[in-house]
Length: 458
Image (cartoon, rainbow, N blue to C red; front, side, top):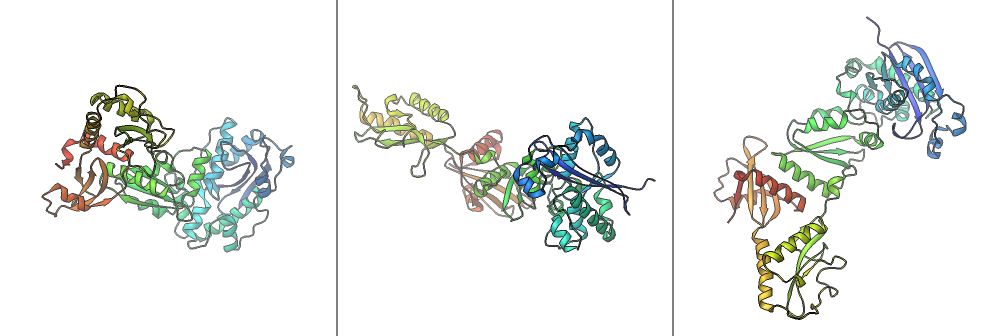
């Protein structure tokens, strides 16, 4: 049986992601598990400018790489050194993604088993203050010369690798380099226990950075399966690479149903404002339907921009949606169009909008105002109070989502042993949450598809 060999790799680059940046230096040290058997090191012409911050970090400038070989010229040699060997690096996914991308650009399809010395050190040498290469070398008395140069960092990583092999009494490294090992896909700074403890249940999960701040909130029908999808694939875009590097911990909250997970996800994103969540951050109602009365006694209905200081009858994500509703109400209740306002350049009800129509044949005030009130009553009558009762997180409980007067009120759980004779008593079992239009759309869509799960309140 052929003895396992390792390719210990370090690279320097023009930036932080493989798709938009290039390699400026590469070092590959071939190790047979006992000793170094081969070494390769060279600068690489990236065919693009080296940014000043990168020069400040590595000391590699444009003049140094001007006459260096292109990666294409060394690609066959790199491929030869890496083929049928374990790819070893400190924070392995960074180096691996660059090398794989560069080889692919040179026409070579290559994959390899990987070993991350960050993750291996965490398992074999637990409890250290930091697992960055510089700090590890200091903690373990490993000489580190030529820091932030491919050769110097590769030499230090090789000594670290040998030390880990020596200390690996539980054969941790053997397990890590198995093709199916989860260490192949987990982010370098994430403790495996965080992943192993994830349940196969619906709910919400949270990713934290090194400062214990939530950077992403997601929902899932199966939390463990969904989290796994974040860590699989070979995407090399900057956002994904930064995202994976920033994940230091995971927590979760199990929900009884997917609908409850969707609601909790939306609520938590609004509250925590995580850096890597985008879509639900942008979802805010921009326009509202307002009523007001002019000095001449006529009542108006108007569409205006949402403000903190005016209560609206209804809110909308778009002006078009609001105008459609107001026009529909005007037709249904025969409200004179002159008393329906669509001016969004100023606050509804301000002096700039409330003006008597400068035309003759105005409708009777009482008759007109009655039509406006009927339209408002119609809107309010459509805002029901009801509960959605479903299974709980365990066999001993049930779940409840409560809607009050057309607005999401809260959700929670109650024991199957509780004798609830009046559905309105369920209101006292839920935890209060802030409502928004997105949540109500989720609830109404669900209630239309599952009418038997609704408990309406008369």
